[in-house]
Amino acid sequence: MEEIKFIATKSDEGLRLDKCIAVNHPSVSRSYVQKLIESGGAWINGNTGRCKDFVKEGDEVKVLIPAPEGLEVDAEEIPLDIVYEDDDVIVVNKPKGMVVHPAAGHYTGTLVNGLLYHCKGTLSGINGILRPGIVHRIDKDTTGIIVACKNDVAHRNLAEQFKEHTITRRYEALVYGVFKEPEGHIESFISRNPEERMKMMVNPLRGKFAATNYKVIEQFGTKYSHIVCQLETGRTHQIRVHMTSLGHPLLGDTVYGPKKDPFQLTGQTLHAGVLGFHHPISGEYMEFAAGRPDYFNELIEKFRNQF
View (cartoon, rainbow, N blue to C red):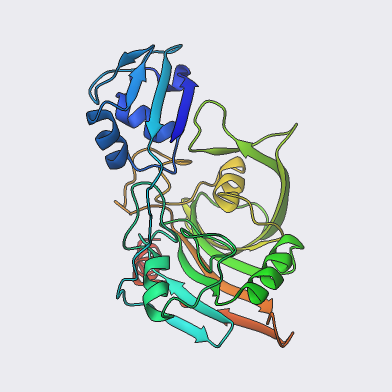
């Protein structure tokens, strides 16, 4: 049993209990939170809560998440866009909307479910039952290249490459606004936002060091830009946080950018286009690329015609 307890902040004021818990504990889906509340598993100031209860600043919120008993992640026949595969690694072009690995409220339909079926269960076990083979992640609504490992030897080697920041990772993004300079470099510390726990933030005093290089590919009038970012580090929401800190949030990113998305996109316009690493067994440098998804290209064409 996992107990989550927190004091509601000013940003939580007026939120329904189910949304407040989901915002403060983003690894749990709102639908799953609603089921927990309905079963009597959440409290406000010691009183049993209801989904429709509104939270006030200073309220103590507590929720109990039952431990999964005998949990097994099911193999599912999910179509995968496989870019490369051998006995040690598998490289996949992940679509928008797919969660990488199971978590509370997301036990099916994930990349791991599909990999278990495709690889017939042959995945590294270092990250446990819920994350077999997973050595790194990209957000649910980010598309593009991700690598998984089929054995523990490969996993340890690639994990070390990620730790040493020797992996090549290039992302393409569409952002608001235009840049004064054609390219730039951002360094900062990134930490979790204490008032909105589902968000990360640039923190001048503490957090994890993060560095991003960016270059403008194309600008559309004075409103939008198409950029490529190369990561020197890989922190949670790094590109989204860094671009927002420069005044250029990603299109579709209602977490860090405008709350109302004029293009009705499903999440941020971010694509992991290139991933390069040294093969964990042979040592050979390998680099893989995936073309931009259709919706991304359609936006570019729309902007070209509009501006």
